[in-house]
Length: 391
Image 1 (cartoon, one colour):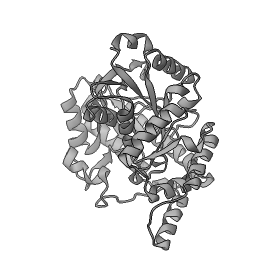
Image 2 (cartoon, one colour):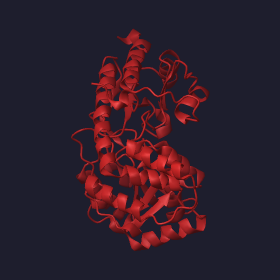
Image 3 (cartoon, rainbow, N blue to C red):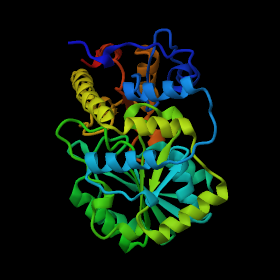
């Protein structure tokens, strides 16, 4: 049976970073290459989002946005129905996406020279923002245990120096695709309290769960509310990242006042298109679309995993969430340059380089599987051909 996600949509020449920039960055032409790097999907969003945007176009006047009660109500409905988390409207700040949200958190709760804790390898934009702000990245390496990542709290205390003020968590984890357990999150809350850290939990991938997986919002963990900052967005879930609309949700009134003051000082306010799209997406129709999407992504995961498993020395980390396959080429004995040459020049695939995610990512590449299945099948065949001498 054909899925709506099987449609191949040509994004080349549409100001699409994923397809229009890959030749300059990776030497892979969009004419015969596969773009599997930037974390957006090659799918249209649900019809409810398209209808809402068409309504704006039909109206034809694009003035300042007022009365965000519907938007805030949609967020509250989504978090309650999909995640069992009750959110009050006054907790919600809307930022220009969550990288912007990260930057404001760093600016609000740290000073130049302070350190920010990251569990590496992790989403590369965290490190980029922290360093650009004149702060230090404190890497706490994730332990690779039986092919999956775990937080090794027994080792982390010794790596702390006292200069750390903020901790960034990626939950579910990007690029490893881990869904952290409630017990792991509870240990993390205790670690943050022990070291007196503001804990920022980026949960942008929380809707993109493989079937059978259950995500626990950090806000539901005991003893963390007074230091917790939650970050969520509809953008990753519904493939509307170009709207640059994210939410920083802060239950604690003291932290909320500090963040509000920084937002006011920067003169930030959201754009109307993002609010309209998010409001439409956070709905029963949007929920049904996500359920269909995650089943499709699980099918893509199985296809790529099967292809990868046939290549000696190469393995894909078990994907519990996200649409990002984290593939380890370390067992091939090849160096990073040779692995990249084979993948980019021979297979003509543009993935993310593992090194950019920090310590522990050096032998990995990250492949975006949120694309029509025919492309995932093609990617698997190309990878097998590029490493055929190992088989």
